[in-house]
Image (cartoon, rainbow, N blue to C red):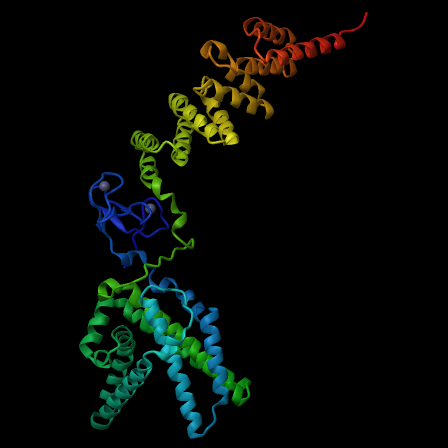
Length: 477
Ligand SMILES: [Zn+2]
Ligand SMILES: [Zn+2]
């Protein structure tokens, strides 16, 4: 009964086990390929074995508060409030008693629906439709018949065999009753619910937990009785009747919800098929575990198999170059491992991609992070370097902008944007580093090399700006 948890997500119950690695995986870590039942092990690639779906389901004794809160959901709460309100109309006449019976039948029909829904794995109350209350109304009647039958049986034992045997059969009836209700809910058959063999098999398959459940049910029953008792002393009779009905219904819904959950928890042992694999987790949903596309990589990284993880990421990017999440992951990996070579190759390419898809600020972030470790890193294209340099300059990263444009004309002699790029260099030199001589040298170089280029007008204008400002700042004689 001990739960097994995922090695990589200690809060998540494990679903698969790799016998050769001796590692347990949750549903997020290993997922079956289409057409297969068991997934392959993310570490060794061999087929894993199932730990049973039951391992994913939280044992019922760990979620007792949730059972108590179940009837407090809007739908069941309103439902039993209405029924309790209607019970105020009940009088002592025959008609009144029939009316009370009708209320009880409708209520127990709803209790059975909750039991069945929970047994199917629906852990939240579903909206009440007409069919919920009116279909298969014989189910609560069968339950009534069951109670009548057991009562008669016990009475006959008392009549023919005396008090001793009577106590024994009463005890046995009480213990067997929840199992009979569970069988009735699942099979909808009165005779099966009454069949001692069916009841014994159900109890045996659930095992010790069945008796724990009985204990809880007994506590709930006495809780309801105590609460009703207290109300008799404080409330007028009419009101007491309605509120005591309300309390009883509330507690019965808790009990039916719990019995349904026990079927759900032990559905594999009971041979009961479940439609909704609703997974509860302490964090409220299993989604946050990790991006399923990278779970293998996360596991490999955690196991220190970094080369393998890197290979997988490189392959993922190769197969799908527009996969930015994989690129980001690889970039992060190279940053964390201070891998200069990796950054030079991969992150430079990543920056190109980001610029091409119009994500300039992302490109700048990647460049600044990577160039911190790999100072020689530059995107592969002249246009991209130029664009990135402009961005860096406007964002106050002038030194980084300069190093990007360094020797651009030698590396990319045919790039038609050189005058624009070098004007930027001159501006940075003059405005940020106060190097007017160097700035003028750059402008001279442009004038000589790119005579007739339409950009030279701007170059000439900027030269005049520098000259004007330097003469203005010189002390007049
Ligand atoms: Zn996991
Ligand atoms: Zn393995």
